[in-house]
Length: 258
Ligand SMILES: [Fe+2]
Image 1 (spheres, protein in one colour):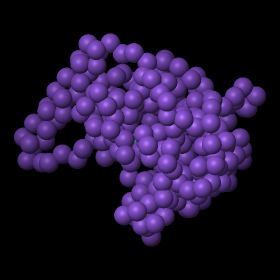
Image 2 (image 1 turned 180 degrees about the vertical axis):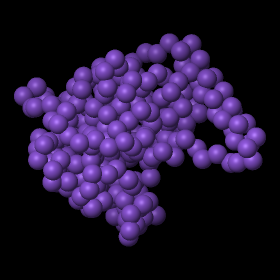
Image 3 (image 1 turned 45 degrees about the horizontal axis):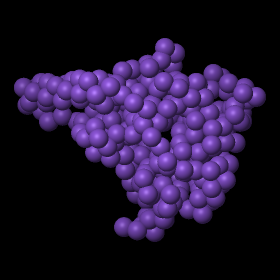
Protein backbone atom coordinates (compact mmCIF):
# COMPACT_ATOMS: atom_id res chain seq x y z
CA UNK A 1 0.00 0.00 0.00
CA UNK A 2 1.29 3.44 -0.76
CA UNK A 3 -0.20 6.33 1.06
CA UNK A 4 0.60 10.02 0.95
CA UNK A 5 2.44 10.92 4.13
CA UNK A 6 3.96 14.04 5.55
CA UNK A 7 7.73 13.71 5.39
CA UNK A 8 8.21 15.29 8.78
CA UNK A 9 5.55 13.13 10.40
CA UNK A 10 6.83 10.02 8.72
CA UNK A 11 10.35 10.59 9.98
CA UNK A 12 9.62 10.07 13.66
CA UNK A 13 5.84 9.56 13.73
CA UNK A 14 4.98 12.81 15.48
CA UNK A 15 5.40 16.54 15.18
CA UNK A 16 5.15 19.22 17.81
CA UNK A 17 3.65 22.52 16.71
CA UNK A 18 3.86 25.95 18.30
CA UNK A 19 1.81 26.21 21.46
CA UNK A 20 -1.53 27.88 20.93
CA UNK A 21 -2.36 30.84 23.14
CA UNK A 22 -5.90 30.09 24.20
CA UNK A 23 -6.05 32.62 27.04
CA UNK A 24 -8.55 34.77 25.18
CA UNK A 25 -10.77 31.86 24.13
CA UNK A 26 -13.76 30.73 26.19
CA UNK A 27 -13.43 27.29 27.79
CA UNK A 28 -15.84 25.82 25.29
CA UNK A 29 -15.11 22.24 26.28
CA UNK A 30 -17.13 22.85 29.46
CA UNK A 31 -20.23 23.61 27.39
CA UNK A 32 -20.22 20.54 25.15
CA UNK A 33 -22.40 17.44 25.39
CA UNK A 34 -20.41 14.34 26.34
CA UNK A 35 -21.18 10.66 25.84
CA UNK A 36 -19.67 7.69 27.60
CA UNK A 37 -17.00 6.08 25.48
CA UNK A 38 -14.23 4.10 27.04
CA UNK A 39 -10.80 4.61 25.61
CA UNK A 40 -7.57 4.10 27.47
CA UNK A 41 -8.84 5.00 30.88
CA UNK A 42 -11.89 6.63 32.38
CA UNK A 43 -13.10 8.78 29.54
CA UNK A 44 -16.00 10.59 27.95
CA UNK A 45 -16.15 12.13 24.50
CA UNK A 46 -17.83 15.21 23.09
CA UNK A 47 -18.02 14.72 19.31
CA UNK A 48 -17.75 17.80 17.10
CA UNK A 49 -17.65 15.73 13.93
CA UNK A 50 -18.88 12.15 13.69
CA UNK A 51 -19.88 9.62 11.06
CA UNK A 52 -23.33 11.11 10.44
CA UNK A 53 -23.40 14.24 12.57
CA UNK A 54 -24.79 12.50 15.61
CA UNK A 55 -23.43 12.83 19.13
CA UNK A 56 -21.69 9.48 19.19
CA UNK A 57 -18.07 8.43 19.08
CA UNK A 58 -17.90 5.15 17.20
CA UNK A 59 -15.39 4.43 14.44
CA UNK A 60 -16.70 5.19 10.98
CA UNK A 61 -16.09 1.58 9.92
CA UNK A 62 -18.68 0.47 12.47
CA UNK A 63 -21.42 2.34 10.63
CA UNK A 64 -23.36 1.41 7.51
CA UNK A 65 -21.87 1.73 5.02
CA UNK A 66 -18.49 1.31 6.71
CA UNK A 67 -15.86 3.87 5.75
CA UNK A 68 -12.51 5.14 6.83
CA UNK A 69 -11.88 7.98 9.24
CA UNK A 70 -12.58 10.75 6.74
CA UNK A 71 -15.47 12.99 5.71
CA UNK A 72 -16.70 13.53 9.25
CA UNK A 73 -20.03 15.32 9.52
CA UNK A 74 -20.02 18.33 11.83
CA UNK A 75 -22.44 18.17 14.72
CA UNK A 76 -24.28 21.48 14.45
CA UNK A 77 -25.32 21.72 18.10
CA UNK A 78 -21.77 21.06 19.28
CA UNK A 79 -20.09 23.39 16.81
CA UNK A 80 -22.48 26.12 17.97
CA UNK A 81 -21.17 25.62 21.50
CA UNK A 82 -17.51 25.41 20.51
CA UNK A 83 -16.86 27.60 17.46
CA UNK A 84 -13.22 28.25 18.40
CA UNK A 85 -12.47 24.56 18.74
CA UNK A 86 -14.18 23.77 15.44
CA UNK A 87 -12.23 26.54 13.74
CA UNK A 88 -8.97 25.17 15.08
CA UNK A 89 -9.80 21.70 13.76
CA UNK A 90 -10.69 23.14 10.36
CA UNK A 91 -7.70 25.45 10.09
CA UNK A 92 -5.43 23.02 8.19
CA UNK A 93 -8.06 22.62 5.47
CA UNK A 94 -7.30 18.89 5.40
CA UNK A 95 -10.08 16.34 5.29
CA UNK A 96 -11.43 15.84 8.83
CA UNK A 97 -12.73 12.52 10.07
CA UNK A 98 -13.62 12.22 13.70
CA UNK A 99 -13.21 15.37 15.75
CA UNK A 100 -13.98 15.33 19.42
CA UNK A 101 -13.00 16.54 22.85
CA UNK A 102 -11.87 13.81 25.21
CA UNK A 103 -12.30 14.04 28.94
CA UNK A 104 -9.76 11.87 30.74
CA UNK A 105 -9.76 11.27 34.48
CA UNK A 106 -6.42 11.06 36.29
CA UNK A 107 -4.51 7.80 36.07
CA UNK A 108 -1.03 6.53 36.86
CA UNK A 109 1.93 5.39 34.82
CA UNK A 110 1.21 1.68 35.10
CA UNK A 111 -2.36 2.24 33.92
CA UNK A 112 -1.04 4.26 31.03
CA UNK A 113 1.22 1.42 29.96
CA UNK A 114 -1.63 -1.05 30.36
CA UNK A 115 -3.78 1.13 28.14
CA UNK A 116 -1.26 1.58 25.34
CA UNK A 117 -2.99 0.89 22.03
CA UNK A 118 -2.72 1.61 18.33
CA UNK A 119 -5.54 3.33 16.48
CA UNK A 120 -7.08 1.97 13.34
CA UNK A 121 -7.69 5.25 11.54
CA UNK A 122 -6.67 3.94 8.14
CA UNK A 123 -8.95 0.94 8.03
CA UNK A 124 -10.69 1.06 4.63
CA UNK A 125 -8.55 4.01 3.56
CA UNK A 126 -7.97 3.53 -0.18
CA UNK A 127 -4.46 2.97 -1.44
CA UNK A 128 -2.94 6.15 -2.80
CA UNK A 129 -4.85 8.52 -0.53
CA UNK A 130 -3.53 10.45 2.43
CA UNK A 131 -2.51 8.62 5.60
CA UNK A 132 -4.78 9.60 8.46
CA UNK A 133 -3.09 11.08 11.51
CA UNK A 134 -4.37 12.78 14.60
CA UNK A 135 -4.04 16.22 16.09
CA UNK A 136 -4.04 16.56 19.87
CA UNK A 137 -4.67 20.05 21.22
CA UNK A 138 -4.43 20.09 24.98
CA UNK A 139 -7.10 22.33 26.44
CA UNK A 140 -6.49 22.08 30.16
CA UNK A 141 -3.10 22.92 31.63
CA UNK A 142 -1.45 19.58 32.39
CA UNK A 143 2.30 20.24 32.21
CA UNK A 144 3.08 17.21 34.37
CA UNK A 145 1.03 14.88 32.17
CA UNK A 146 2.41 13.20 29.07
CA UNK A 147 1.34 11.96 25.70
CA UNK A 148 3.08 8.62 25.96
CA UNK A 149 4.18 6.94 22.73
CA UNK A 150 5.99 3.70 22.09
CA UNK A 151 7.09 2.30 18.78
CA UNK A 152 7.27 -1.09 20.50
CA UNK A 153 4.62 -1.60 23.12
CA UNK A 154 6.86 -3.68 25.39
CA UNK A 155 10.10 -1.76 24.94
CA UNK A 156 10.47 1.18 27.36
CA UNK A 157 13.52 2.42 25.46
CA UNK A 158 11.22 3.39 22.58
CA UNK A 159 9.10 5.59 24.82
CA UNK A 160 8.44 9.23 24.02
CA UNK A 161 6.82 11.44 26.65
CA UNK A 162 5.53 14.80 25.45
CA UNK A 163 4.30 17.22 28.15
CA UNK A 164 0.79 18.60 27.84
CA UNK A 165 0.57 22.19 29.08
CA UNK A 166 -2.40 24.30 27.97
CA UNK A 167 -2.17 24.97 24.26
CA UNK A 168 0.20 22.09 23.50
CA UNK A 169 -0.37 20.99 19.90
CA UNK A 170 0.90 17.65 18.67
CA UNK A 171 0.20 15.59 15.58
CA UNK A 172 0.74 11.86 15.96
CA UNK A 173 0.60 8.88 13.65
CA UNK A 174 -1.54 6.97 16.13
CA UNK A 175 -1.71 3.91 13.93
CA UNK A 176 2.08 3.62 14.10
CA UNK A 177 2.59 4.33 17.79
CA UNK A 178 1.26 2.53 20.77
CA UNK A 179 -0.09 5.45 22.73
CA UNK A 180 -1.97 6.60 25.80
CA UNK A 181 -1.90 9.66 28.02
CA UNK A 182 -0.42 9.57 31.49
CA UNK A 183 -2.55 12.16 33.22
CA UNK A 184 -1.54 12.91 36.78
CA UNK A 185 -4.51 15.15 37.57
CA UNK A 186 -5.86 16.16 39.99
CA UNK A 187 -8.59 17.46 37.67
CA UNK A 188 -9.86 15.85 34.49
CA UNK A 189 -7.88 16.56 31.33
CA UNK A 190 -9.57 17.86 28.20
CA UNK A 191 -8.06 17.61 24.73
CA UNK A 192 -9.34 18.23 21.22
CA UNK A 193 -8.54 15.24 19.00
CA UNK A 194 -8.95 15.55 15.24
CA UNK A 195 -8.35 12.99 12.50
CA UNK A 196 -6.75 14.66 9.47
CA UNK A 197 -5.82 13.28 6.10
CA UNK A 198 -2.15 13.82 5.25
CA UNK A 199 -1.36 15.83 2.16
CA UNK A 200 -0.23 19.27 1.01
CA UNK A 201 -2.77 21.11 3.19
CA UNK A 202 -1.61 19.41 6.35
CA UNK A 203 2.03 19.89 5.37
CA UNK A 204 1.45 23.62 4.92
CA UNK A 205 -0.28 23.81 8.28
CA UNK A 206 2.63 22.01 9.99
CA UNK A 207 5.09 24.41 8.37
CA UNK A 208 3.02 27.46 9.32
CA UNK A 209 3.10 26.42 12.97
CA UNK A 210 6.78 25.49 12.92
CA UNK A 211 6.27 21.77 13.35
CA UNK A 212 9.33 19.88 14.53
CA UNK A 213 10.27 16.58 16.03
CA UNK A 214 13.28 17.63 18.07
CA UNK A 215 12.11 16.37 21.39
CA UNK A 216 13.98 15.30 24.52
CA UNK A 217 12.05 13.28 27.06
CA UNK A 218 11.62 14.74 30.51
CA UNK A 219 13.46 12.47 32.93
CA UNK A 220 11.69 9.57 34.57
CA UNK A 221 13.23 7.52 37.35
CA UNK A 222 14.30 4.12 36.10
CA UNK A 223 12.76 2.38 39.09
CA UNK A 224 9.35 3.94 38.35
CA UNK A 225 9.63 2.67 34.79
CA UNK A 226 10.72 -0.79 35.86
CA UNK A 227 8.01 -1.13 38.52
CA UNK A 228 5.26 -0.03 36.14
CA UNK A 229 6.49 -2.32 33.40
CA UNK A 230 6.53 -5.26 35.81
CA UNK A 231 3.01 -4.42 37.00
CA UNK A 232 1.71 -4.34 33.44
CA UNK A 233 3.25 -7.71 32.65
CA UNK A 234 1.71 -9.08 35.83
CA UNK A 235 -1.73 -7.68 35.00
CA UNK A 236 -1.67 -9.09 31.49
CA UNK A 237 -0.56 -12.49 32.79
CA UNK A 238 -3.33 -12.50 35.39
CA UNK A 239 -5.87 -11.50 32.82
CA UNK A 240 -4.80 -14.19 30.38
CA UNK A 241 -4.90 -16.81 33.13
CA UNK A 242 -8.39 -15.73 34.22
CA UNK A 243 -9.68 -15.90 30.65
CA UNK A 244 -8.00 -19.25 30.04
CA UNK A 245 -9.70 -20.60 33.17
CA UNK A 246 -13.00 -19.62 31.58
CA UNK A 247 -12.01 -21.28 28.34
CA UNK A 248 -11.93 -17.96 26.54
CA UNK A 249 -9.39 -16.07 24.53
CA UNK A 250 -9.21 -12.49 25.59
CA UNK A 251 -9.88 -9.44 23.59
CA UNK A 252 -6.96 -7.16 24.10
CA UNK A 253 -8.05 -4.24 26.27
CA UNK A 254 -6.06 -2.10 23.90
CA UNK A 255 -8.77 -2.77 21.35
CA UNK A 256 -10.92 -0.15 23.02
CA UNK A 257 -9.85 2.14 20.23
CA UNK A 258 -9.80 5.89 20.52
FE1 LIG B 1 -5.94 6.18 20.39
